[in-house]
Amino acid sequence: MEAVIKNKGRKQARVQMNWKDRLFDISIYGVAIMMIIMIVYPLWFIIIASFSNPGDVSSGNVWFWPKEWKLAGYIELLKNESIWRGYLNTIIYTLVGTVIGLCVNIPAGFALSRPNLPGKNWITTFYIIPMFFTGGLIPTYLVVKNFGMLDTFWVLVLPFSVSAFNIIIARTFFKNSIPEELWEAAQMDGCGTIRYFFTMVLPLSKAILAVIGLWTAVGIWNSWFDAMIYISNENLQPLQLILRRLLIMNESLFEMASGDLASELRQLSDMMKYAAIVVSTLPIMMLYPFLQKYFNQGIMIGSVKE
Image 1 (cartoon, one colour):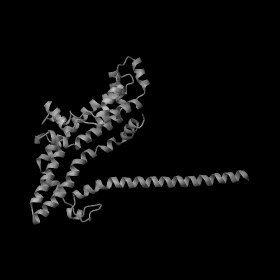
Image 2 (cartoon, rainbow, N blue to C red):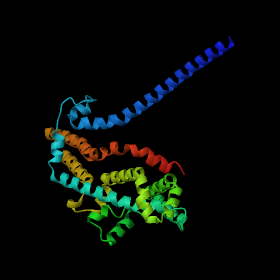
Image 3 (tube, rainbow, N blue to C red):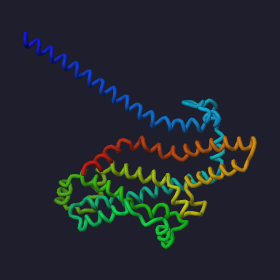
């Protein structure tokens, strides 16, 4: 009889625990869904607003789908030849700058992860200090000018290719994710440091390569301030700077106009703003689904463990 009562009590406790677990799971999924909506909906709204009548958008009639499809913003934006030239420049800057960034930061992170590196603490301090203190815009401009890189292709990919943050992330990843026993086994087979890095370490570091590569690519793709400071040649300007100039130009035309013309220019300017956001962000956002699987491994292992 006592055994039956104990079994019944265990079943009731199990049912109660299962109910609590289900409630906890429902709460977690509910919060996750709300966060996804909060992140995804603004992006979706920008897309549908770029195809909508600006009057419907400003009056709050557009929520999930355009009331009236319009392509005037995209047509006006893409008929400008400088947009296509800026697109090509930005793609080249991003590809070349990402490759250079990986070639600079990944080996530096690996070198700092070696326990027998002479002066490792001093070198690490040398990298960390610029993360908090910089020389300022004017000294940087003078350095770039003295190297003869003003109004050149390389000014957007070489001077700022070193990232102390990426180096620290890569160092921590190598330190915590690549076992030291692998290096000892490689030494027994007569493998040197360089060969070990290229043949054994890099194939095991796809996660951190993807993460740092994407961070570098996004930074270069979205950069416009450096181009505004160092590039005056319109043939070398990236997409973001050209879009900024076009939007400012449209705002100036709108301020000078009056009456019905001002209203039309205002609507066209609003549509071009939304279209410019989509045109400038959609290509780089398409990379995220292909690299998302590397993010947890690359960031969590590379930065949390220490």
